[in-house]
Length: 452
Ligand code: 5AD
Ligand code: SF4
Image (cartoon, rainbow, N blue to C red; front, side):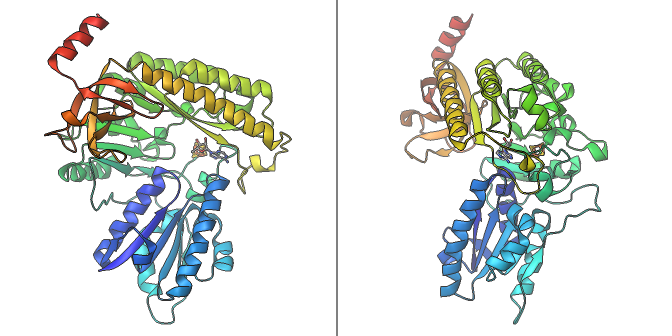
């Protein structure tokens, strides 16, 4: 056996691509290892969504350079979005890299490896979009799936939000056929998976070229025996259809959690971001979802300091965050991305003002998260046990349907294990998690009488 070390940056889609790479390499005798020192093959799966991600990747590249100097036989690969965007720079500045593959070329990895292992071979560089196919054919291959698995159902994006590099590095949107996805989910369930998260950059338009749809996928997945929970990400508010909202009424396996990136609370900024919805329309979608599922939790993404954002615009962002009461807010400082239209705009707001806005938004959203979690105390929530808690292995941990990590008292953990769905009486809360005890008949009766 040989070792492969894969370092992943960025989103869940990248994490899922990394899993696929490991699975593709297993038949060639490569076993995933935890440290680059133990590997014969090192892959960096990169992300270019914001500048910070690229900086992190550069730091790793320096470490790899040293590693390669010590062990010239080591094979190095750079994959993912930075590979797509910066292939020339990588070839120039990191000439010791053997393999460069864009996100659309990852399935070629075994072939690339075979090529570069030949004597006197050159680097293998491929960053071509697959322009021909109407659908995306791939398989979800996971070597050791836990109880919860990510399943990529589409790739690319047809929106061109003015700040976003995704369509430039991942190409136009392509979906997998529903039947292929369902076959994968059945295989995962047979391996013990209880929860799937369907992944797509703009998942609301899943299947549009093939006359299929996300809600159809949900109904089909819901029928799979042994699958307990369905999640999905990421949604574009402008593409969120009534049929999807109805799923929250009709499909109990669909979790009570919705990540709905709004990006800004100001209509003016949304227009210049090319988001194609107004705050009123966003509000209406949120309330329709709340009507369909009373206990639904929301999270969102905000970009702070977009070119032209005034204090007034930013106050509208704060007001929206307060009004919606998000369980979780991901707030990012705007980062100009090469080749995007926003990067051309004049940006006069000083960095110090942007940073101060970011910290105001973060402070407000932490307060909201704490308050929402505190309100969970005394409630009974169902959690799917994922295994021992990382911090305190005597406690088991899982997530609520609302996607909040929740720990179970060690005294109650006996006899329980990965994959169990249990009801927990919430006793304590914090910014990022909850904790509690297994709910007994008595605690359930008490909670019921209080809510009556
Ligand atoms: N600058 C800052 N944040 C960005 N995002 C995407 N592009 C940029 C950018 N150029 C954020 C958006 C998106 C999330 C995945 O990353 O909020 O929803
Ligand atoms: Fe980027 Fe999402 Fe906009 Fe597509 S919809 S361009 S992935 S922000």
